[in-house]
Image 1 (tube, rainbow, N blue to C red):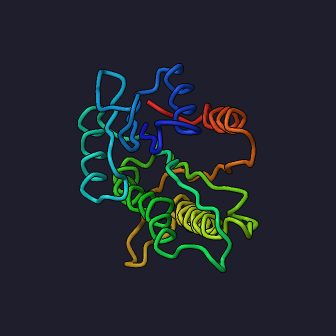
Image 2: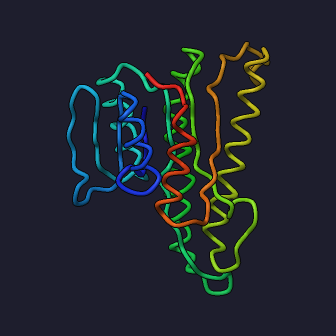
Length: 207
């Protein structure tokens, strides 16, 4: 089970809950105090920048090398930016899109082929209420979460088609895609938010 943004908040809460259930965890986030590289038979911690393509590929390879496969991907990583549309910093917004949408999508693309081949797997994308109703004081964060919901919905529709025996654009039978889920980030205190997210994920299948 691979969790991004695992050093704090929902990611760390998910790791704590799933660790109790005996899950084999691959955890990633930016390096910092209390989150440093290590590995043992049940856990791999690999710190780095998820927006870097080389890091993503190494993360997937090391996870598969250690645990054999990735049954569950939890795309939790995300950052916020509070600013109205009239003054929001465009360059910071681009960086936020890299972190909140493009990096999770690229990681998903690395993992989906093996899930298709096996015909099983679960991908969880962390969404937000701000991905349904735009908040004027946090417009670009909301834009990234609208994008997360759009990508997840498209992946889910593709999954449903494959599971019903659909065909790919090339006309060949498609392999079954993994389960796709979007879980909202609620506007609550961090403890409540972390508890809610970890409880929702507690029943996800894992090795």
